[in-house]
Image 1 (cartoon, rainbow, N blue to C red):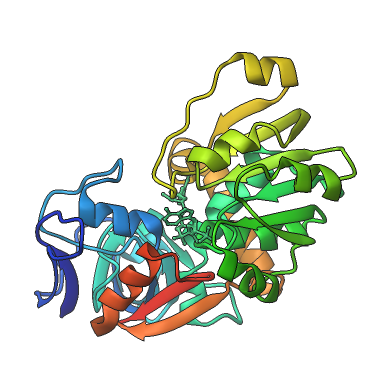
Image 2 (cartoon, helix red, strand yellow):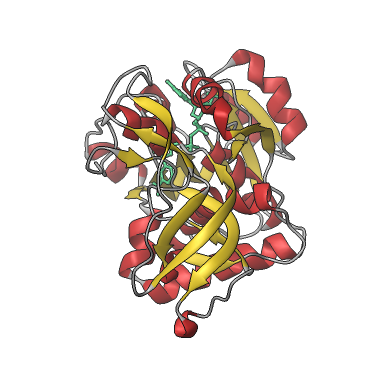
Length: 324
Ligand SMILES: NC(=O)c1ccc[n+]([C@@H]2O[C@H](COP(=O)([O-])OP(=O)(O)OC[C@H]3O[C@@H](n4cnc5c(N)ncnc54)[C@H](OP(=O)(O)O)[C@@H]3O)[C@@H](O)[C@H]2O)c1
């Protein structure tokens, strides 16, 4: 089978190659899936450089999430050959076949195709865990969502809107303001540059935001500490901007807000019942047509480099999907 293999760690993808490998053997408790679509996530890019917290042993097949059809599963697994499924297990998705534990897969919601299903798990799972499960989002609240042109950002915009929140979406790329307006129904799209608190205060009529969702970090995080309402939450999602910010503890004390770390995958592993409930809630919203992942482009697996380069260059609005 064809697979995208990370052979050595490199800053420029030079350690990655499309190779022919045997179909991976399936063990007990695992499911063999014919992959139809796999979506790229920022951790996939970081893993080619050895910059992600999870460091798989080299060489490994890249790709943390995918959708496809079951080829082979244990009888008691709940999956049967031909079932359309989606999920992933950190690696192995950018290949014609993948083997993952049964618990890392879900049945595909009715009415959505493989590309959308491949883009559902990580982005919406993260958005739901952060906004609903940890953030306690309520209709009518103001939410500031950074990195909103990205996978986890755009999913959060869509989810927050469906749940009745007022959403201010940000981008750090001036040329993406209009693209983001077209791709989302955010109440406002602003540039997350310099002192954006004033824009946030004006849009919220001085109330500031109940939740701030931050996958970017660095200067964006620093300025966000000025955008959270008293009693609000600043949700730390990631550091796509490259700098992990520091915060003096007197700031959340004086301003009465919480800084909360979100690890959606780990949350689901530690609290499997909650993880299942989150997956089901997202799948139900998708099956009802209320969540529609914005797919920037679908590329054949052979064009993997274009996908990674576009992500590194911040050229994507939504998700890129690879089809093996
Ligand atoms: N906590 C969790 O459970 C969890 C789960 C999944 C992902 N994450 C993290 O969330 C972050 C975003 O992941 P993603 O998959 O949504 O990535 P993505 O699709 O590439 O989106 C990241 C967005 O961040 C913005 N950005 C700002 N500075 C950037 C820079 N220097 N380089 C690249 N992008 C930059 C870009 O938007 P603009 O160009 O519009 O500014 C980009 O669209 C990553 O740090 C990832 O590790 C966390």
